[in-house]
Length: 177
Image 1 (cartoon, rainbow, N blue to C red):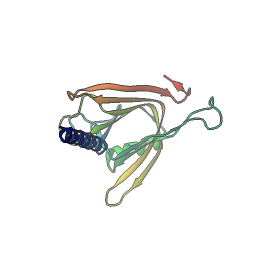
Image 2 (image 1 turned 135 degrees about the vertical axis):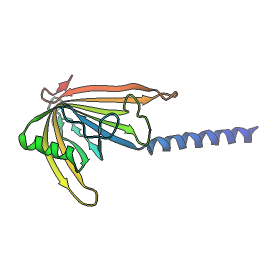
Image 3 (image 1 turned 45 degrees about the vertical axis):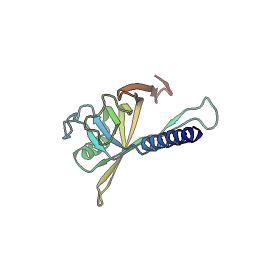
Image 4 (image 1 turned 90 degrees about the vertical axis):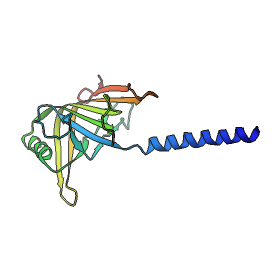
């Protein structure tokens, strides 16, 4: 009986470890949409593909009441029409109304109704566009929004997505929305 209990315990540990490793190895597809842009994607939902997304915020270093430093969000996109539109907005100094960027589980035939991670940017200034054409042409786009909203979701045991953390930050006012 003791050997059976030990074997069951080991199986449970291995299963838990493999599940944790599988979740850690989960890859994501990053997609985005820009309010007012023409349809340029072959995806059914019309969203455009991005290679990566980076967002950083730093709390005040000197005093707890100082201003939070929200750095420009960086999206790396393929060379093409969307990259050219980002460049055009940067050169003209025009604001983008809203930009929605989502991280969806990769390889899923039908994406969930709610992304595990999403960022909505409002009143967005395109502060930098940097082309890097090599074997895989990429464009690094830096976006500086006036407001940012972050949404998360978790998957239940039945596979349904349920809302997780959600908050908004008004960068101009330096406070939660």
